[in-house]
Image (cartoon, rainbow, N blue to C red; front, top):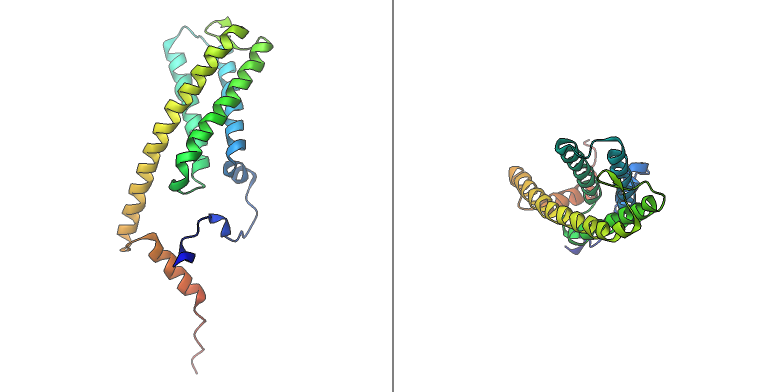
Length: 187
């Protein structure tokens, strides 16, 4: 029975090499790094080309950035079981916000970071860094909990619709089909 529930899922045989996007989404540090860089550059572009006084402009760009962040997080978490999400999501938030904070420091140092309609100074960096970290954690952790609940409910519905008691039943049937020798040809 122990072989039906491996502790690590890397025991699967790979039929073909995964695509570059799949390799990226499997890596927590790489996915968080790319997300942090893209979000900070997106923010810098929006603030330098938009109207920060317009509430609609600011709101729509915030929503688009949050959607991008959550899509990247979901793309990463989709590669792992829900059991591993409890540590992957907060670590993703920490790495992503750390990347964004470092990008903010670099943009501030060269004079490209904006705060409202003005240019950010180095004294603005630390309060902004704390705000980025807080927003990321407050957005990612509840979203991950909600996503885990939805995934668990959907999996249970699918299992019950197939008249199974658990996923282990499907795995067991698949193992039996593979392990049984083919039937001899009829004479």
